[in-house]
Length: 366
Image: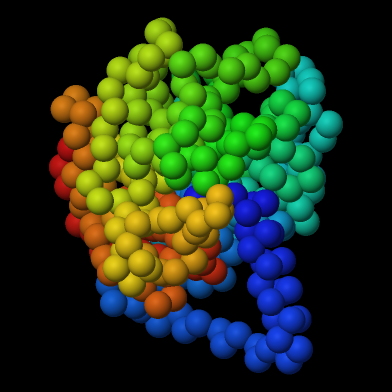
């Protein structure tokens, strides 16, 4: 996906172009929230880059990849959202011993949430890890409890990223170990991973560690989405430049165990949802956008042209990937980046749009 610095650069270039024309530009017309060709929308959430379902409930959690967008609690039954983390005193319960290097709660006005990871820790209890770019580069940690059907959120601490590293996605193991992907390490560019060059890696923090450390062998072209196996034996990394999911053995990550190619799309985030390992992303070869993503004069296309989308299920047993939903470009929705199943609906996130999308998707016995 286009990172935050890339977004700012494109915005600055657009402003300069407008100024050079010497004429005021008309205000953009707000996009309709009416259903599209296939998808219905919940409008309002700014750049809901990632989305996870709270198991056993109609609720979901969406990130907001924009300053102050923070976390959204999504009522899947009513198709509505609300800003969730406000730093109200009832939402603060810092664990200063476990997160000794964390300076304090994230500022809701700056909270720029990207990748999400939700893990069950007990009956009606979950641990939520969130990639944050607002005010600091960090993994923010929350407890989520469900009481009388209502999810409650408490901030517990944060794990600062090493200097110069920007996390993209996060995942955890049952022993408390945290993994984070870095799309581009210092000196690497988006164009580098589009061309297939190794740019990123996975970093690990374990309880008792003072900082994240590199997991050697996980260097890939554009380390993006991230998930762990239910039995803790493997982890899955989306290599955005390869359009693939790369499987690693946790005990021996020096080289990949498998590389699962995506059929005709660019997978972004990856999550277990309703017992299925799902990935979502934009179409790789979009005729209306000139085909494949291009690099011109060392700069990668920002993919603002609307592309079709695919949601697919990954089968780690057969190392295969099968689309379960695909669609043509939607006029009001682009930058598909995540998917989650909840109570008969498939929810879709976007790192570009001002809305979440959903579609009826009958539950299947697993």
